Length: 630
Image (tube, rainbow, N blue to C red; front, top):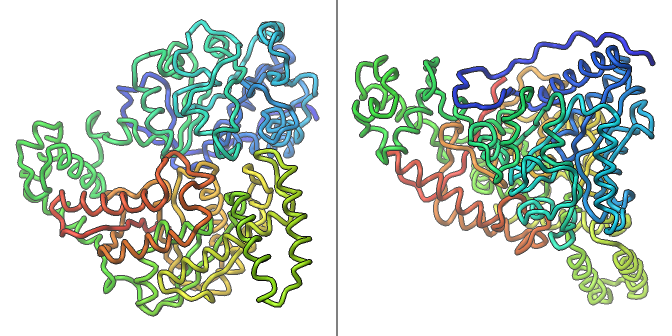
C-alpha cells in the first residue's frame, strides 16, 4: 500500500465558548464517537506529513480503554487505503512490571490484539517496555529505551490518556519534570482503578516501567484523551490548575503543542461547560437559565423562590437579571420547570408496551428499581432485556457454593450424584489451574452466566415483575471471557433489533451511564441506538435514559423525577440484594468503594433532599431520568 492523501474528514462539531481559565488547548465534543474520529484524523495527517518529509514517522502510543476507539478508526482508515503504516515506528508509554507479554493484562498483548495485528506495521518498528527484564538490568533497559527513541529521531506525535491521579504514562504524583524512562511504584488509587482488570487489587502489579515526564514533553506534538465523568475532576485540574508534581498531567502546560480531546462527560467540570456564565455572555436558553439559577440557589443556600436581585448581582448573574428586570419572574420560571419534572405513578405511562434494556443483569433494579414497580402496577406490558451475561463478575467461590448445593440436592431432584461429582471435578480442575484474571473454561463461564440469570429473575420478582418478562440476549461482543471486549458488531445490533421488532415498544429505557469502568454500558447503548436507526415503524418509541450504578442525573439534567416513598426505596434495595454474587464485594466496584445498594440509597435520598432544598415538594427519595431527543 502506498500513502495517499487522506479522505476529506467530515466536519465534527465541537463545544466552543470562552476559554479564559484553560491553560491547554482543549477540544470538547458532543459525541463520544467523534473523539476517536478526530484524533485518528490528526494522526493520519502527521503520518502523511512526516513520511513525505523524512521517509518515516514516530508515534508514541497509549493503552487503556480510552484509545481503543482511535485504534479502531485507524484500522478502518488503513483498510480503506487512507493510511500506510509501513514506515511508522512506535514507542509505547509503559508496561506493568513484572509482566509476561502473553498475559491478558500485558500491554504487549493489548497493542497487538487491538492495533498492530490489523495494520501493516513492521514488527521491528514496534517498541514496548519489557516487563520481563531481570530487575538488575531494568535501569539499563530503560536507558536503552530512551536511546532507541533518540535514534529514531524523537517522537513526532504522542498519544496520552490520564489516570485518576493525573498520571500520564505511569508518572504518578511526585514525578519530576526531568524524569525519564524508569521503573516506578504504582499509586494505591492507580492499583485500585486497575483492580477489576486483574480480578482483585491484590493481583495488580505494584510496579511498572514508564516513559518519564521529560520523555513525553520531548514529543513534537501531544494529544491527551479523556472520556467519562470519572475523569472530569482530574481533567479540570490538569487543564485549569497550576503546574504541580502532584498532578503530572499539569506539566503538559509547558509544551507548546498540546491538544486535550474530551467527550462532554469528561469536560463536565471545565468552567466553560459547568458554569459558562462566569466567563462571558451566553445564550440564555430556558435550560441554561435553569442551570444558572439552581447553581445560584445552591451557592447561596436558598430556595429558588427566595433568591433576590442582590443574590444575582453578587454572583455574576447580573446579565440574567437584566433580561427579566427582576428576580421574581426568573425564579418562578425555573421553579415551575423543576416542579413539572416530578412524576408520581399517576403521571407515568400506563397500558403501554415498555422495553427495558439492562447492560448487566443487575443494572435494571440498581438504577430503576423504583419505577419498574410503578410501571408494572400501571399495567404496562413489560419486557426487561439483559444485554450481557455479566458472567465475568462472578467469583469462583459462588460457583463452588452453587455446585455444592446441586450435589447435596441431587438425590432429592432425581439426578445421578455421580454425574454431579464428575462435573464438579471438571469445574474444580479448571478453577485450580487458572491464574487470577485468566479466562474460565467454557463450563465455568456458563455456570456463572446461569448464576447471574437466576439472580436477575429473583430481583424482578422482588419488584413484582414475573419471570416471563425477562429476556437474556447474551450479546456476542461480551463473550470473550475476559474484561476486554470485542467491538460492537452487526450481530449485536441485529439481536437488539429483533427484540425491538418483536415487542414493538412505546417506551424504551436505556442505560445512560458514561462512567462504567469498562465501557459495557456505552457499548450497549450504541447497540440500542444502532437497532433503532434500522427499526421500521410508523412511530419511533420514546427513549428514557437511566443511571445510578455509577452516578445519578442531576436535577437540571433530568427531564423526569420519580418520587419514591421509604417503603419503595426499601423494596428497591431488597431487589438489589437478590443479586447475591454482587453483594458485599463486587468484582467490578468501579470508582466508588460502597456497595451498589449503598450508592443507590445515598443518591436517591440526595436527589430528593436537593429538590427539597430548592423549595420543591418534599419526598423521601427520587430516581432521575433523561428523555433522549431525536
